[in-house]
Length: 424
Image (cartoon, rainbow, N blue to C red; front, side):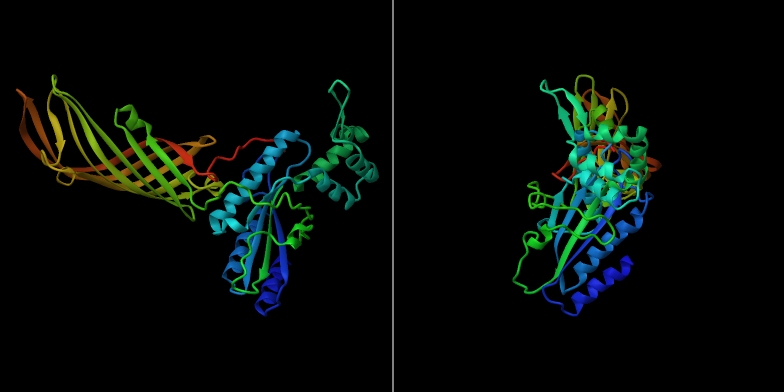
């Protein structure tokens, strides 16, 4: 049925039904207390595929334009109000991350409405059901204040308490089982029209969008003009991060890296290290510098939530030079007194890693690269302030070429870890 509706909308626009506005709302469900998108939960896999497919079809159709994509969130009413508010925002953000990772949407058409009245949604479910004590439940939802305080400011009654006390808790448990799972959702509401004139530029959702949206297969939601205004923070379809390998830092090798998401769960990372320590009195040196590039493909459940987290595999290439000597025999990569290109050693290999969030803006990435390292190096002995050459060798090493325990700092207004907790 959904496919037929979508095809009908596209057909009408293709044959030139001028001035028509079409709306579509699709919901994605969440487990209790979770803001993570789970493709195995309910109809999420098919609904998300429908959202991505429909947006892509509209973008490819020269007779259509997307005038608004509104991301909304909802939480069931058994949780606390403040925690539910955060959970609604997190679910809305998770859905937006998922969709914008797969569809390139301009910021001008993206809106948020995370102020859904969950009690109103519950009332709609109750009204459409044949549950016991239906009239009493609707009366409590619509007539009883959400919270009642006495003159001293103490909470003495609430809408939730009255509903939980009805029929010795059986009424509440019925709603908990039958209705609440459907209210734990985030929805995407798409509005698209046939393009009338090329010079017409839609910068905000048209007036008719601000009326109740009639959902094809979900309960309609009221959207006020206040809720459909764009968020002030800029959004980006690219995700950036600054990084430092803490293992190198522990070895007194300062280093810095950057990584950028390329879309479709690919990313490109680059890093550079530089250390030039010495103690001439004891002929102790610790010199190393160089850098590398990695192309990564991210996969797994965590990577579906947002870029730059979860499992990743890729290829890595490095160039570096070094001069290690601790009062005895020294080892120097490349020609003495030469440049990096005269002195470089090189490495390349395959990598595997996993990046996990530890704070809102911080991840830790554990990575291992294994492959081949080659290049020429010199052995020498420091004698009377001079460095006496002993041998020249060519390195041929197969095995681990890089180990990382990297602290990752996520950058950008739209690049942060969504809190896993929350209410219901």
